[in-house]
Image 1 (spheres, one colour):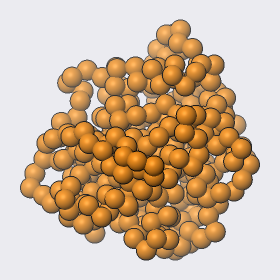
Image 2 (image 1 turned 180 degrees about the vertical axis):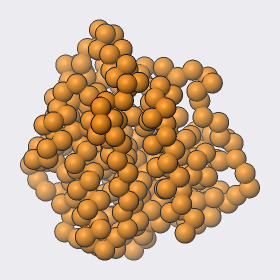
Image 3 (image 1 turned 30 degrees about the horizontal axis):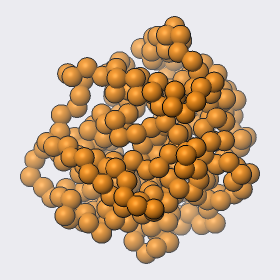
Length: 312
């Protein structure tokens, strides 16, 4: 399918902005640019309404980390979702993903706890994923106090999809399995892996090959050539016994084939895994529904499918 025309306009707008490419800047510049593109471009009427939003902290691996709790409208208790934001392990935060968390909270009717794990390069691998695992364990243990009903799932986009997949594996191994996992265009294998989409979509579709390399070098450092499943959850020794998954991919995304491969591998290991493909979509489209009706339709449908897993 052709590139969604509304997203094509977004790409043209970004190309004409004169902004320095992420891979040519510093992490601080990348963070400022990403915040401007996401929260900074949001108008008040585009902010998804929820019952309440509370900033707090949750335990990470080396101390407390910032978090944000979203409560849905209606009478609880509700399922709880630990959310891990994207941004290549380097540039995301609670604000860049605020509206995405609001959307999941509203459509899935779930308490969402967004976790602001430590970022690279200041805190390279495995700091961020260790924070994510520690926070998820705390959310499971405290779900009812957070307004939850005892059902806990994980969700995340891109790098956060990687974290969500890893957390699901780690909590399985710890004997505290989750109810579901929602992986939005996740990075689940090494960037250099030979997937056709990595070459087909290497340039011109928001997430580019040199940007991925920049992210990964900042995050993985000397671990980049290992098969540590905390970096590449697709390489885990066993994928059996994992929670049901909804995995979302985008047609014009270098990570497209990784997500599809993970869905296939999960099913082969005996798990339930639904793959929702995004025809005409680009990486990052989950936060672009305000610009693209086509993107919004896929966002809503995929969250509804995730929400259905939380009600089983």
